[in-house]
Image 1 (cartoon, rainbow, N blue to C red):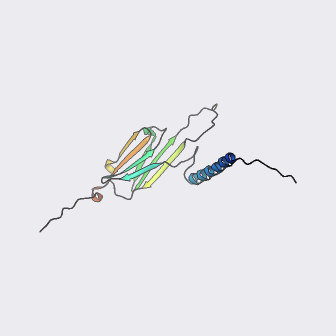
Image 2 (cartoon, rainbow, N blue to C red; image 1 turned 120 degrees about the horizontal axis):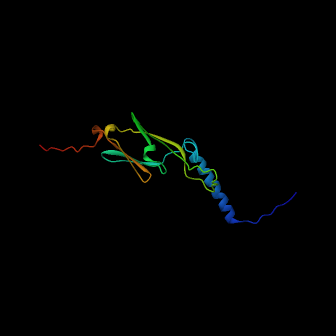
Length: 147
């Protein structure tokens, strides 16, 4: 029977705890459709509604505008693309966190939109989609008449 005594090192224990938390969070966020490095990953986006439109902003760094595929079919909006990693077999990475590979994100748009005037803009790695609401669902001011 050997008794091993090790000196308590709070910094080492704190780093170990952080690594465990990082691993747990990474595993919970990468299950399903999101993976890092290879395969499909979840496209991060924001969406907000104005009186006239639904606006969606998505971060797609490292891709050219012509490599984005955006489709609207019924009430489903789909954004697809692929980010390629520079291939250099002599490169030995020490850190590899930037997502690469295919991505696809489908949103259900529950508000009727005017498909004919949807706009897509791409600047500095950010895709902005403006989905104008159909006239029937836009808010209207109703004047009250007095008798």
